[in-house]
Amino acid sequence: MTKHSRQRECIKEFLTNRFDHPTAETVYLNVKKEFPNISLGTVYRNLSLLSDHGEIRKLSTGTGPDRFDGNTAPHYHVLCTECGGVLDLNMENIDHINALARMQFKGEISGHVTYFLGKCPECLSKENQK
Amino acid sequence: MTKHSRQRECIKEFLTNRFDHPTAETVYLNVKKEFPNISLGTVYRNLSLLSDHGEIRKLSTGTGPDRFDGNTAPHYHVLCTECGGVLDLNMENIDHINALARMQFKGEISGHVTYFLGKCPECLSKENQK
DNA sequence: TTCGGTGCAAAATCTTTGCATCAAG
DNA sequence: CTTGATGCAAAGATTTTGCACCGAA
Image (cartoon, rainbow over all chains, first blue to last red):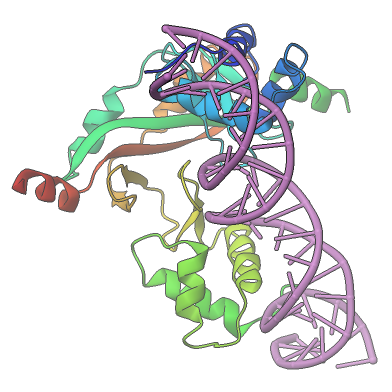
């Protein structure tokens, strides 16, 4: 029931080649180069659709707009508290914390959302230069 | 430099006695009973201030408005994917994951944000009644 | 031809802010 | 008095949506 769309394909491809977890606005600005008439609404619609289909991942950072990740393999992120950037973290899987949560919870635990806070290498070195 | 304010005191007290992690809107509606003229803006300003001072905690759930917790002791939460409610989880501390993150990250890790996804006991039992 | 997708603009949702006035210290 | 806090309304930021038209199957 989902038809093919060149815009959606372009959005997905863009995300697959970016590793800085861009916002919808950034995706919009870039996809606009290939589709000058595309609208932000279409970008949001496609990002939701791709995310619902598990083809991309949506990241909510608690501050500012949501970000999107073309890498759907399980991994974690670090949110830089200085520049607001989001970096990948290839740390080992920590699904064992789900079991810890289940130990005292009377409902059902299906998973968890975790991201780390800190400073990215760039902001850290700028700081040390002072 | 922070002056005392009866409104802020009331907001804090309200949060201290609620355990369902209300949104700013809910805080507003309730504090309004005591201060009929209070405005949403004042509620937001005070929630930010209290949060900055570490007197309450702000919870971003990735869906819908932020929620606030009067309990500042470290603990985790479960977000019910059915009703959207947020429940406390008194599980053991998992700060060891910060060390795991540091193992491969070249920047600085200061902490983490984690919440679990699942179904609360109420939604789970309603589901089983079908 | 059919029905999902698009562009555009308006609306919805959540939060912040400017400003005149109020009240705590 | 002085200065932070408040109430109100307007503005901001982000995301969603209605609708007429377009394009994929």
